[in-house]
Length: 290
Image (cartoon, rainbow, N blue to C red; front, side, top):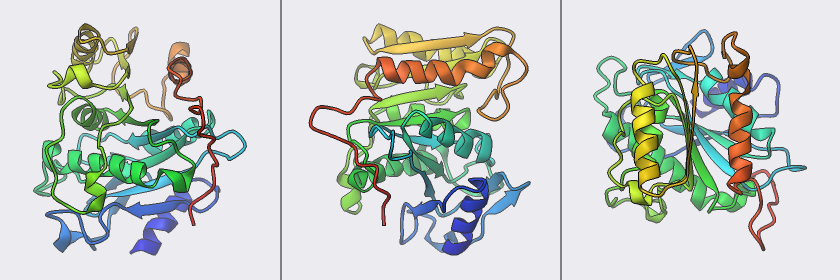
């Protein structure tokens, strides 16, 4: 099964070097141990479902310009599937080009048939586990443990907001669970309404938010969260695109010229916030993990 996952990741990377796939719970995620060996379902080679073994696919920045920042990318898909290519691997490669190492998350899907999972419980736990894992293993990837962000699209944006803007309940698990699950910054791309309003806005990390002005589902909560964060004194930047609906992701941005450039605005925001600059005394090595 592990070999199959690695092969799929290789194909998704379109000819790049072998991707490393990390199982977040080697002994099975809590509540999913009996299903962890079920094969994932893949549609058209890019949409994943039936996820019972949460994992991270590593997309490392070229060591020549890696800057030590890291982002955990959380694809959307309505909690029924994962748009793993356009809201996962393509986003990761876009981040790689500005020196950011990316980790694309496969999380358990609460609305995938009768999976029995919950969004606030199981799926959010997978993202918190991912943040903890990247922080604990930062040195292996030349990553600064204090420059780790989350980037979520749609349903993945809901998870990013739940993890970034709400306090995590205490976890009694393994040594990894003693790491902080709070990301250092958050990128919410047309995020769904769950997670808004924030219950811990005062301690929320800096935020970049983007949505379409005609997105009836996700534009109102995006604006509401932005206003709440600013009122709480959190650094936040909001971009709303005119005459635009949902799902202008990294691979399908529509015909509007402005939509072609929203990733550039994200890069500007990351640069302005200092996230792309190594902290004093921390020179990123960018050495691939063994």
